[in-house]
Amino acid sequence: MQQLNDWYDVDDVLYDGTKEEIENIVCPDCGKKISYRYSDGSNSFEVSCKLCGHISRATGSPKPNCVIYFGNEYDFRK
Image (tube, rainbow, N blue to C red; front, side):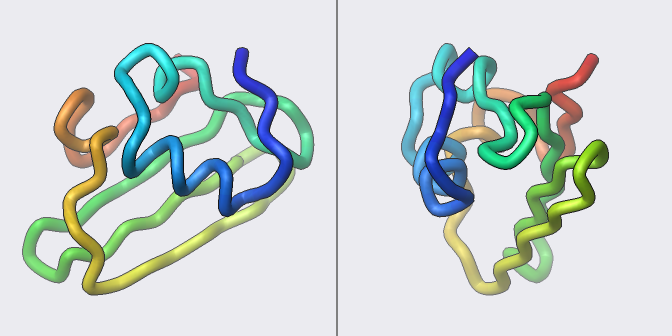
């Protein structure tokens, strides 16, 4: 699993990473798998770690690579 330093790194990988990098992403706070949701209508993006409770939200964002590879909603813990 890819260990990242902060949530900015997570965003970078989710937006611009390869399929393999995205599949292996983990929470920089607790090291566990994360989840995301993207809305085509509002171009809003939410990334969360359900274990430690972190939630990051953005609106007006372009479609990230994770959505292209895995769809609008994904739970990497599965």
